[in-house]
Amino acid sequence: MDAEDVVRRLGLLPHPEGGFYRETYRSGLTLELPDGRHRPASTAIHYLLPADTWSAWHRVASDEVWHHYDGGVLRLHRLGLGSRVLQRADPQAIAQLNISRHLSPYPKGDIRYVPAVDERIEALKAVTLDDLKRFHREFFGASNAELAVSGDFDAEVVRRLVGELFGDWKGTKAFADIFRPYRELSPSNQTFDTPDKANAMVGAGMRFRLGDQDPDYPAMVLANYMLGGHSTSRLYDRIRAKDGLSYSVGSSLATLPGDNAADFMVFAITAPENASKVETAMKEELQRALKGGFPADEVAGAKKGWIQTQEVSRSQDPELLGRLRLQLHSNRTMAFDIDLEKKIEALTPDQILTALRRHLDVTQLSFVKAGDFKKAGGK
Image 1 (cartoon, rainbow, N blue to C red):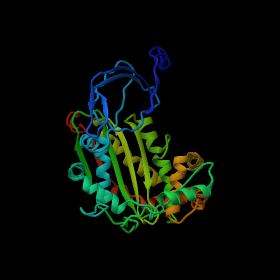
Image 2: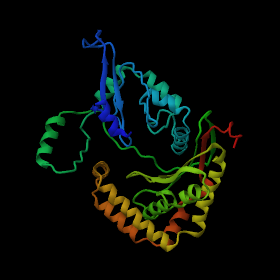
Image 3: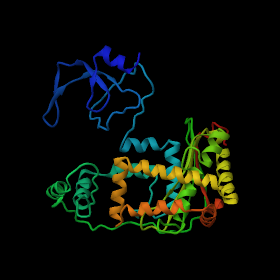
Image 4: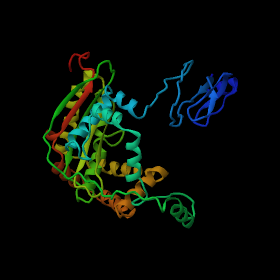
């Protein structure tokens, strides 16, 4: 019996938040809520969420009891304080957070400071309603807003509506971009134990002196793509396909317009007993690239693959709008993207290797491993 059979047999209807449902019970007892509304003391429904669909984000304002009768695993995501509490024992969250803390070593009180999980929880607990009202009053507003619109629309109508809806909405705080200038960081190697977690996370990162206007930027973008930016990249092929040590592995290179620093990160999900092997494999693959570079056929394939990913990204409205908004904020146009693609198409293997050797130093990588290593024998 598939999802369509269940919908038909139980007479389920589309749910406004996603999925299908049918109410099976409604209490005759009515309760008055603090805001004056009335609602039944309890209700019961059948609810079906088919594979590859999701329920929209919504706030659960009252108690709910769920009975799971059939189907696969349902993954729940919690926002706010609950999600922070869960991060205390989540290997992926711990590894990513501590790599970020190392790459952004600003003092507490600086807006660029990355707080630990417990610090975030205590800060959330301390927030009052008056704090939220004050923050909204001072910081929210359209004084420095940018708007990107995609699709079939009348530009004049949009401009008029934006003016009518947001023209008088002003914030009281002055706006300024926040940058993270390059600074040298000493490498570190940290291990965090997360009891009773089946998977572990191995993360590595370092900061380059590199902005998106740097002559080496196109070469480093393509180098990252070949190292860990797609499903047949070198790190993926070595650590997952050949060694069978990881469920998911990849790398990223991130910088923002106006910054002169870029963060290079590598992450892999693995079994706790394989964490040290994954760390070794990461180092070896990066050293192999630094020693021998990338052959012409690999570079040609990477250029084609990277450009295709950009084309697909621009065909998706959310991705396109995000890119347009960033370009607008940075006083750029899509000509920047076109120019970057041309520079990447023109790269030679020697240029890529020269740039990689100028910026990547495996000995300067910082590692974070998080998992149940005590159960795995301390590996």
